[in-house]
Picture 1 (spheres, rainbow, N blue to C red):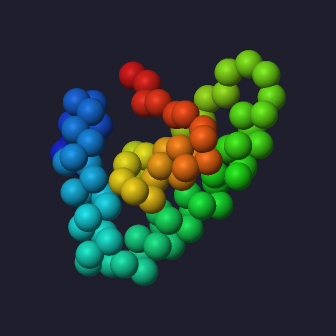
Picture 2: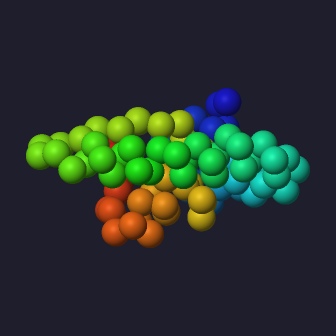
Length: 87
């Protein structure tokens, strides 16, 4: 957990991707699909709907959902929605 916190707080996206994405995708592909890919795909339309209103929308998810090619950010970007990490 300490390693994950350090990676997140220092914006070590490469380290986080190795920990969350590469390891899980290789060692537990079914778990990766269920916990990250499927959940992210389910959330993206809901997030798009929330963003249709006026003003600012804040959405918080676990760090693993924000990195890699199957991330919420990547899925939103594929739909033309810009998202950014804030400190």
